[in-house]
Length: 108
Image (cartoon, rainbow, N blue to C red; front, side, top):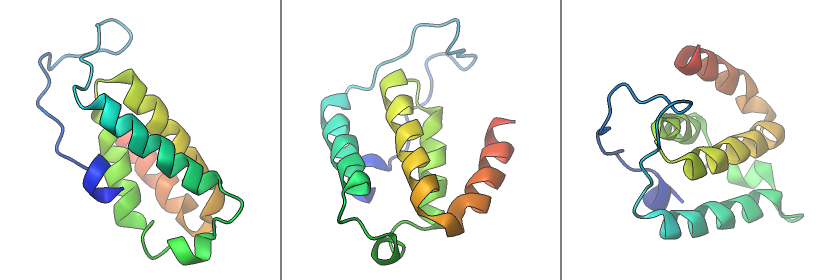
Protein backbone atom coordinates (compact mmCIF):
# COMPACT_ATOMS: atom_id res chain seq x y z
CA UNK A 1 0.00 0.00 0.00
CA UNK A 2 2.80 2.41 0.92
CA UNK A 3 4.41 2.37 -2.51
CA UNK A 4 1.11 2.73 -4.35
CA UNK A 5 -0.82 5.32 -2.36
CA UNK A 6 1.69 7.48 -0.51
CA UNK A 7 3.08 10.07 -2.87
CA UNK A 8 3.77 13.75 -3.10
CA UNK A 9 0.63 15.46 -4.31
CA UNK A 10 1.08 17.76 -7.29
CA UNK A 11 0.85 21.47 -6.56
CA UNK A 12 -2.68 22.74 -6.80
CA UNK A 13 -3.69 24.54 -9.97
CA UNK A 14 -5.80 26.70 -7.71
CA UNK A 15 -4.11 27.53 -4.38
CA UNK A 16 -7.46 28.85 -3.08
CA UNK A 17 -9.24 25.57 -3.94
CA UNK A 18 -12.52 25.21 -2.07
CA UNK A 19 -14.12 21.75 -2.46
CA UNK A 20 -17.53 23.31 -1.88
CA UNK A 21 -17.15 25.91 -4.63
CA UNK A 22 -14.57 24.76 -7.19
CA UNK A 23 -14.53 21.88 -9.65
CA UNK A 24 -11.99 19.30 -8.47
CA UNK A 25 -8.88 18.29 -10.36
CA UNK A 26 -9.25 14.55 -10.86
CA UNK A 27 -6.22 12.34 -10.23
CA UNK A 28 -4.92 10.94 -13.54
CA UNK A 29 -3.74 7.75 -11.85
CA UNK A 30 -7.12 7.15 -10.19
CA UNK A 31 -7.83 3.79 -11.91
CA UNK A 32 -4.67 2.38 -10.30
CA UNK A 33 -5.23 4.11 -6.95
CA UNK A 34 -8.83 2.91 -6.79
CA UNK A 35 -7.74 -0.73 -7.06
CA UNK A 36 -5.21 -0.24 -4.26
CA UNK A 37 -7.74 1.50 -2.00
CA UNK A 38 -10.37 -1.19 -2.65
CA UNK A 39 -7.86 -3.96 -1.92
CA UNK A 40 -6.73 -2.27 1.28
CA UNK A 41 -10.32 -1.79 2.46
CA UNK A 42 -11.10 -5.45 1.83
CA UNK A 43 -7.96 -6.35 3.78
CA UNK A 44 -9.04 -4.17 6.74
CA UNK A 45 -12.59 -5.55 6.64
CA UNK A 46 -11.59 -9.20 6.27
CA UNK A 47 -12.72 -11.62 8.99
CA UNK A 48 -9.14 -12.91 9.09
CA UNK A 49 -7.65 -9.44 9.66
CA UNK A 50 -5.61 -9.28 12.86
CA UNK A 51 -4.72 -5.77 14.06
CA UNK A 52 -2.07 -7.24 16.36
CA UNK A 53 -0.19 -8.56 13.32
CA UNK A 54 -0.78 -5.48 11.14
CA UNK A 55 0.23 -2.93 13.78
CA UNK A 56 3.89 -3.17 12.81
CA UNK A 57 2.89 -1.72 9.41
CA UNK A 58 -0.13 0.42 10.29
CA UNK A 59 1.46 2.79 12.77
CA UNK A 60 1.56 6.53 13.52
CA UNK A 61 3.72 7.25 10.48
CA UNK A 62 1.27 5.36 8.25
CA UNK A 63 -1.70 7.29 9.69
CA UNK A 64 0.07 10.63 9.25
CA UNK A 65 0.79 9.82 5.60
CA UNK A 66 -2.90 8.97 5.11
CA UNK A 67 -3.97 12.24 6.71
CA UNK A 68 -1.65 14.21 4.42
CA UNK A 69 -3.45 12.74 1.40
CA UNK A 70 -6.65 14.52 2.43
CA UNK A 71 -5.09 17.50 0.60
CA UNK A 72 -5.90 15.69 -2.65
CA UNK A 73 -8.34 17.65 -4.79
CA UNK A 74 -9.91 14.42 -6.06
CA UNK A 75 -13.13 13.79 -4.08
CA UNK A 76 -13.00 10.08 -4.93
CA UNK A 77 -9.67 9.74 -3.17
CA UNK A 78 -10.81 11.77 -0.15
CA UNK A 79 -13.87 9.54 0.15
CA UNK A 80 -11.75 6.36 0.20
CA UNK A 81 -9.37 7.99 2.68
CA UNK A 82 -12.27 8.78 4.98
CA UNK A 83 -13.43 5.16 4.91
CA UNK A 84 -9.92 3.73 5.37
CA UNK A 85 -9.20 6.05 8.28
CA UNK A 86 -12.53 5.12 9.88
CA UNK A 87 -11.69 1.40 9.63
CA UNK A 88 -8.22 1.97 11.11
CA UNK A 89 -9.74 4.06 13.91
CA UNK A 90 -12.18 1.25 14.70
CA UNK A 91 -9.61 -1.56 14.69
CA UNK A 92 -6.51 0.05 16.20
CA UNK A 93 -7.47 1.27 19.65
CA UNK A 94 -3.91 2.38 20.36
CA UNK A 95 -4.01 4.83 17.44
CA UNK A 96 -7.29 6.54 18.31
CA UNK A 97 -5.86 9.37 20.42
CA UNK A 98 -3.14 9.97 17.82
CA UNK A 99 -5.72 10.10 15.01
CA UNK A 100 -7.97 12.51 16.93
CA UNK A 101 -5.02 14.76 17.80
CA UNK A 102 -3.83 15.01 14.21
CA UNK A 103 -7.30 15.44 12.75
CA UNK A 104 -7.81 18.38 15.12
CA UNK A 105 -4.40 19.79 14.20
CA UNK A 106 -4.84 19.41 10.44
CA UNK A 107 -8.51 20.21 9.93
CA UNK A 108 -9.44 22.62 12.69
